[in-house]
Image (cartoon, rainbow, N blue to C red; front, side, top):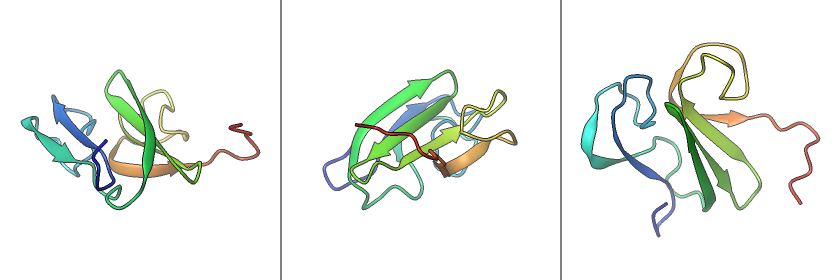
Length: 91
Protein backbone atom coordinates (compact mmCIF):
# COMPACT_ATOMS: atom_id res chain seq x y z
CA UNK A 1 0.00 0.00 0.00
CA UNK A 2 1.23 3.50 -0.73
CA UNK A 3 0.41 6.70 1.14
CA UNK A 4 -1.18 8.37 -1.90
CA UNK A 5 -3.52 5.42 -2.49
CA UNK A 6 -3.12 2.25 -4.47
CA UNK A 7 -0.86 -0.79 -4.21
CA UNK A 8 2.56 -1.62 -5.59
CA UNK A 9 3.98 -5.09 -6.26
CA UNK A 10 7.28 -6.58 -7.42
CA UNK A 11 8.49 -10.04 -8.41
CA UNK A 12 7.60 -12.80 -10.82
CA UNK A 13 4.60 -11.97 -13.03
CA UNK A 14 3.79 -15.00 -15.20
CA UNK A 15 0.07 -14.89 -14.30
CA UNK A 16 -0.30 -11.11 -14.03
CA UNK A 17 0.12 -11.15 -10.26
CA UNK A 18 1.75 -7.70 -10.30
CA UNK A 19 -1.50 -6.25 -11.65
CA UNK A 20 0.31 -3.78 -13.93
CA UNK A 21 -1.32 -4.99 -17.17
CA UNK A 22 1.67 -7.09 -18.29
CA UNK A 23 3.28 -10.45 -17.65
CA UNK A 24 6.73 -8.85 -17.33
CA UNK A 25 8.46 -9.70 -14.06
CA UNK A 26 10.02 -6.78 -12.17
CA UNK A 27 12.53 -6.26 -9.38
CA UNK A 28 11.18 -2.70 -9.01
CA UNK A 29 7.83 -1.84 -7.44
CA UNK A 30 5.07 -1.56 -10.06
CA UNK A 31 1.71 0.10 -9.43
CA UNK A 32 -1.36 -2.09 -9.70
CA UNK A 33 -3.45 -0.62 -12.54
CA UNK A 34 -6.70 1.01 -11.50
CA UNK A 35 -6.07 1.26 -7.75
CA UNK A 36 -4.42 4.70 -7.67
CA UNK A 37 -6.50 7.15 -5.70
CA UNK A 38 -8.41 4.43 -3.85
CA UNK A 39 -7.87 4.20 -0.10
CA UNK A 40 -6.63 0.65 0.43
CA UNK A 41 -7.03 -0.65 3.99
CA UNK A 42 -5.74 -4.21 3.56
CA UNK A 43 -3.93 -6.42 1.06
CA UNK A 44 -3.75 -10.20 0.86
CA UNK A 45 -1.54 -12.26 -1.44
CA UNK A 46 -1.95 -15.86 -2.47
CA UNK A 47 -0.17 -18.11 -4.93
CA UNK A 48 0.13 -15.95 -8.10
CA UNK A 49 -2.76 -13.61 -7.21
CA UNK A 50 -3.46 -10.74 -4.80
CA UNK A 51 -6.47 -8.85 -3.47
CA UNK A 52 -6.99 -5.42 -1.92
CA UNK A 53 -9.79 -4.15 0.33
CA UNK A 54 -10.83 -0.48 0.08
CA UNK A 55 -12.28 1.75 2.77
CA UNK A 56 -15.61 1.43 0.91
CA UNK A 57 -15.58 -2.37 1.54
CA UNK A 58 -14.83 -3.13 -2.11
CA UNK A 59 -12.46 -5.99 -2.90
CA UNK A 60 -10.29 -5.95 -6.01
CA UNK A 61 -8.18 -8.92 -7.12
CA UNK A 62 -5.71 -9.62 -9.94
CA UNK A 63 -3.49 -12.41 -11.24
CA UNK A 64 -4.08 -16.17 -11.53
CA UNK A 65 -7.69 -17.30 -11.68
CA UNK A 66 -7.32 -21.02 -12.44
CA UNK A 67 -9.53 -21.90 -9.45
CA UNK A 68 -11.79 -18.84 -9.23
CA UNK A 69 -9.44 -16.88 -6.94
CA UNK A 70 -10.61 -13.59 -8.48
CA UNK A 71 -14.24 -14.22 -7.52
CA UNK A 72 -15.42 -15.64 -10.85
CA UNK A 73 -14.60 -18.59 -13.07
CA UNK A 74 -12.74 -17.44 -16.16
CA UNK A 75 -9.41 -16.22 -17.37
CA UNK A 76 -6.58 -14.66 -15.39
CA UNK A 77 -6.60 -10.86 -15.05
CA UNK A 78 -3.51 -8.70 -15.64
CA UNK A 79 -5.28 -5.77 -13.94
CA UNK A 80 -7.61 -5.47 -10.97
CA UNK A 81 -11.20 -6.71 -11.14
CA UNK A 82 -13.95 -5.89 -8.67
CA UNK A 83 -15.02 -8.97 -6.74
CA UNK A 84 -18.78 -9.24 -6.29
CA UNK A 85 -19.43 -9.83 -2.59
CA UNK A 86 -23.20 -10.17 -2.82
CA UNK A 87 -24.72 -9.92 0.66
CA UNK A 88 -21.48 -10.63 2.52
CA UNK A 89 -21.30 -8.65 5.75
CA UNK A 90 -17.70 -7.51 6.39
CA UNK A 91 -18.41 -6.19 9.90
